[in-house]
Image 1: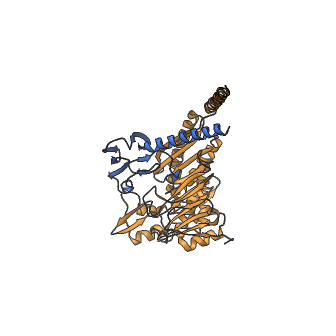
Image 2: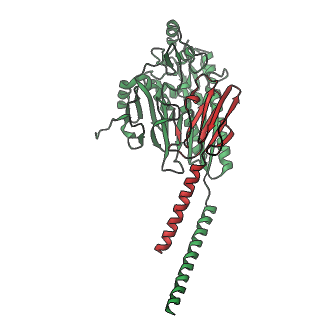
Image 3: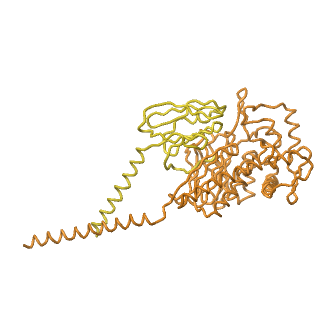
Length: 116
Length: 360
């Protein structure tokens, strides 16, 4: 019985850690324009790239590097999204209110939301 | 002979063990299959001049989808009756016809009544007739500017919530007052959405109207929801503290939200109803935790305008209100005793003082 229990525990541990490592490997960023998902980017796999998101109010240039993503330029007045800098951890997010752009890294973070 | 018997017994044992294991695994997967699976739905949209987000959990995706659509439609409906930027809104109608009784919806009456109540409670530090001042500075728009002193004085003479009266469904303003529910609308709407979601049988949800957050129940993964409080000196999304929240609302006000700079002076969007200028506060931010999100929205603005000393006096006189104040240098945090077990300060450079705790 003890032997059986040990096996079960071991299996649970393997399953748990397997999942943990898989999650770490799949760092996914989502880019939303006006609430609509327009790009899903596997941050650890994809090569460095830059792309521009155009909305009726203006545009934002986004740069992807290994394991991180950032808005590097914007034509809005406050440039809140650019100041946010690199996003690299799960739950990190950046937003450009004027251009209805948001980027977030999927997955559980320490918090469910942040006030502002 | 004896030895081989032993081996057979061992084999039999192993076989039984394996059989039991397989049975258990099957049972577990069957349970996973028949138990209703928790589904998460997230929706993001741009309304009320900000980003609104909804996260709902349930078991039926179609129901959640409908719930999210309803919530978004409801926000638009409220925006259409409250916004000062929409000429056909009920607030615009009231503002367009001064010294006249204007018949409006029960919702508008309720929101105005609440805002007058909070104005009274804070001795006008929160004032829903601040509209003329807001319109003069236009902070948050590309037309933001520093008005002349004479302009400010003139606009300031129009700010007086006491000139607004409500009778039944009739609202009347004085000759010059302009209502602007901007300081309470997000919170007030959040309360209506929370009621609606609960009525619809939602047990777990997070409503985020531009950083004005309310939660229903707990997060499926944790014992509570975990909400970060925006760090006043860091970029949006970075927090200095985490609040464990269940069935409550958390709202933060700070000058970092919206501002513009001219000749190296920073002008922010939280106005002092007594000076007509951006409040010269010695606080960096104010967070209110309350079941009433409208109250949290109005009070965090009012306490920011009051500054540290008056805020501490206010909290001492209103022990039912839970708040987190950050001093201007962001090195000191005041927090009310009711929060001390549900908050974790993450910024280790901040010193914390618990206020209103009789045991200390």
